[in-house]
Structure formats: structure tokens, C-alpha cells
Amino acid sequence: MAMATLRNDYPDTPQTGLEARLAIRSNQHDGPTNGMAPGFVQANLAILPRALAEDFMRFCQLNPKPCPLIGVGAPGDWRLPVLAADLDIRTDLPRYRVWRDGAVVDEPHDLMRWWRDDLVTFALGCSFSFEQALIEDGIELRHFTCDCTVPMYRTSVECTPAGAFRGKLVVSMRPMTPAAAVAIDVRYIGTVQLQVMCRSSMPSSIKACSNENEQPMAKVTRSSRHQRIRSCGSSASAPSRQTR
Image 1 (cartoon, rainbow, N blue to C red):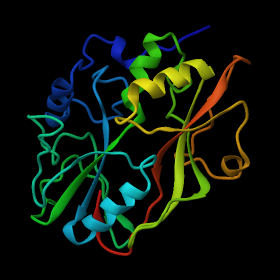
Image 2 (image 1 turned 45 degrees about the horizontal axis):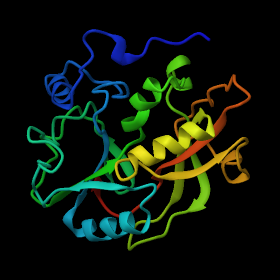
Image 3 (image 1 turned 90 degrees about the vertical axis):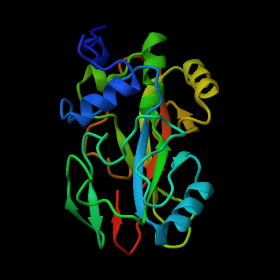
């Protein structure tokens, strides 16, 4: 089977979390982070005004699969020492998306001009964290092979609302055998999203819904593989200004 060259096969790919952050901070990397810092936990980032933080915390607690909390910052604090000592939330991501009144108003490379004393940082578990384990176990990642974004879908399943936050469950998919999927769950519970389902065909709640990233599903070439569906977020919305 033909395999695409993986990002972490290149000699200049950051191999640790610190190397990755320094590369991003110095504008040496501005793309996706899958394949970077293999073996290290990656996280999704949500930053909200303090007035919305309590509701969002509750939303995460009520929806632990799409929003697994692995770190929360203090208001106005751009550090998350529970995750890393040398970490600046304002500069250490390749790209940010700033929302105001439900619309994107900026996609900057850093948040220096947007940072405020009332902003609260939430780090949510990311499925990129277990991809290196899949590779080491000999499991093909079809989005790597096809050089496309991992398939993500907005389902018809409603998340449990909390205050201003509500929305549809969003899932990602990676084809693998059931045995491999169970092994990954056991090793990564608490740092990434827990299993939603393991099926040989897409459930109707996902079939009818749009692909979150408008990417075609990677073609599965082995009949013994099942589609591993994992929650990867929520299309949550709040009727106020917010920074993400």
C-alpha cells in the first residue's frame, strides 16, 4: 500500500512541544500542527471574555466528549503552566480566529493586539495527540496518505446546552480495526476525546450532515477496517463578542 510521507519524517519537523512552540513563535511555521511533536499532547484553544467563561466551563463539563478540558487559565493570564512552562497563548499557535457578534473579524498570527485582562483560556483535548501512536502501531492515516484534512462532520446530535452555549456535535473519522481502536482508547482516555462509535458504516445522523471542513472522506481501501468516529468539538454559539 502506498504511504504518504508523514510530517514528522522530515528532519526539520519539531520533535518536542517546546520546539514546536518556538518555531511557531518565530514565524517559522504557520500551518496545521498534525505530525509535529510526536508523542506530545496537542490541544485546541478557546479564549472567551470572563463574563462567558463560567457558562463555557459548564458546557465543557456537560459535554466531556467534544470538549475534554485539559487546562484552564486565570482571567487575563496568557500562560498555562499546568501544560507547559514556556507557553504564551498569545503567540504560540500558527493562526487564530477572532469572532465578534457571531462573525469572524480577524485571522491573525498572534493575539498581541487583541489580548485583554478579562480573557480566559480553555485548552481542549485534540485527536492529533494519538496520531503518532496509530502510526507506530502500523495504522494508516488516510488523511496523511491523501494529503488532506482529517474528515470532520457536523452531526444532527445536539450537545447539552449551558447558558449561552449550544450546538451540534462535531466528529472526526479515522478508519482502523476495532481492536486497534480499543487499544487507543485505553491509552489516551483523559487527554483526547473518548469514543463515540465504531461502525462498519456511517450512521444516518452523520451521513446527512455537512463536512465541517468541506473535505471529502478519505477512501477506505481495506474491507476489514471500521470507521472510527470520535467527537472532536461542537458548533457551539454564543450571542456576544468572543475570541477564539
